Image 1 (cartoon, rainbow, N blue to C red):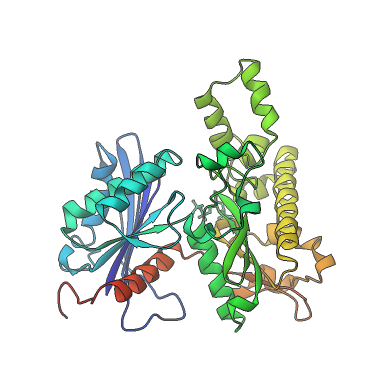
Image 2: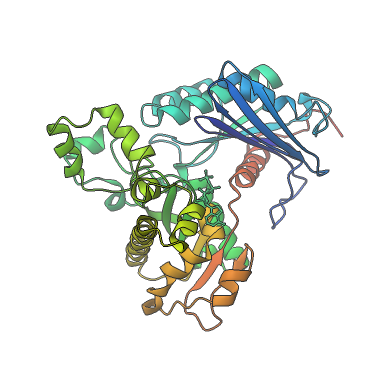
Length: 412
Ligand code: ADP
């Protein structure tokens, strides 16, 4: 089964093509084709790779997101990166949908009703959900009547207990949909399952805290295979300090700034999402690599940014452990989680009261996926490569096998 995955951002689009046979491999397989396109104004930069090792970079002028994505997808069946003879070879398309609203707790086949629900949830995540709906329409145009699957970033958190989802404001907020949804669910769910596999344990028997530390950052506390708490909430702004997002701050700051007439709603949104976090404190960058480099050169605000990031991350891990009543495994994933031995070391140092001990050499030297805890640590510490596209492809495969008597669109 050839599965195409679309992961839409507000000004970028990532996409991968996988082939899955009769069974799903334990280890994530190599992609057949992978592409990314980013656009700023009317110029889009694309980078595409295929399984033969061909890499192609291009810069094109585009008038819309649809044109940019169409350019990216055309390299699947054209040019030297081509991975299929024609669009008709693709059997199913999976979409990462950031906000599934209150109803979806599992992937679903895309129907007009599902699209209407995704459009409704766009009130909560306007940039993302609209981009994902555009992606679905473009697939219909380019690939014809191929089955499409929506995989929701909120779904994994839908079984969180109400104590973790309801905000302690007036109860009518909850009734009108203002509650904690949680995000990065595809990544947290994949990492928890992968951790159980690496530890040769049943996930149902494990208490796991997964740390997704990319440009956006969130934690999940996982018990009996479900998320029971997470740090992001109504929007992906709650919780940890991130690259350019503040994470949780005293809501009184916002009412103060409104009263003083300093910020209008859109400006507030921009400040909290794009001008805060590592960038806001350091004044240098939201990229952890640049923060670490500047810190080593003695830049005081870069050091402060790092210290706040670690302080809040460690405190949030503590809250997750308290909710779980213990922790068997701590997982680090995504750009910072996979690559920054400094962040992992700083966070874990004060978790020794849990019996958690890092293997200092493994922390620096071992590439993910790896167990980097000392042999006598009471908690296993794992680095796991983020594989959101592969996790979505796998969900599509399962759904197709379950819900349809699947036959290839083009028989082999
Ligand atoms: P996204 O959340 O957009 O998918 P990633 O998971 O790729 O992003 O994470 C991007 C972030 O990872 C970068 O902004 C950078 O801060 C961080 N990062 C990547 N490589 C390293 C590294 N070697 N050391 C520290 N941080 C890194």
